[in-house]
Length: 171
Image (cartoon, rainbow, N blue to C red; front, side, top):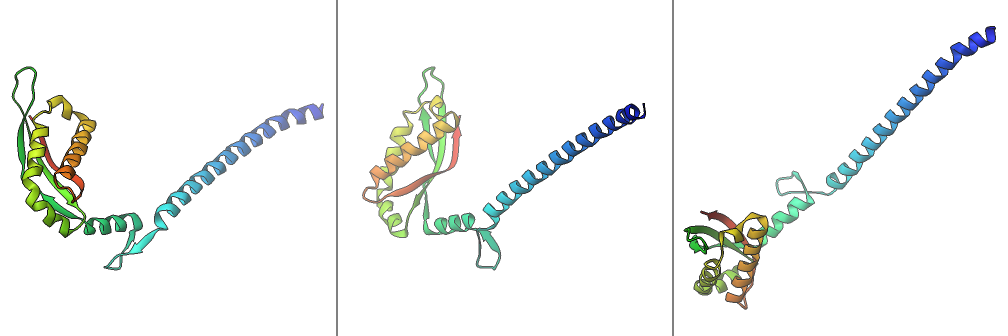
């Protein structure tokens, strides 16, 4: 009978040890996965840094963007206000302040004599818009792309790189 008594006491101990090994194994796997995730995140962002002019390290992405913005010039246009189309007779207005991003100073001097054509192209297009055309980010994106297309037609052979919205107000 002693063997049955010993067997009865050993079985719960072995089950407890097996549960302990499973818990410890799961914890080790979780720690290893977390460590690997942190390693990959740190190695992808921390490894690509460059020194800036003041000696501080800056990630390559930020340094590259700063260099790109230094190579472009911003040309600010006067704020424009237009009536929007309305099917119900309500008065809707849009106030828009736009800046043009150009590649160099020479392009800025080329664009200046053609500003009247640019503003005219913008006004003609925007007067045909409805308030619903400007709803959501997709509406603003379509407006931006259409204005870019129209400004590049108006200033050809010069080229505007991008349209920057400084203010959009729709009432």
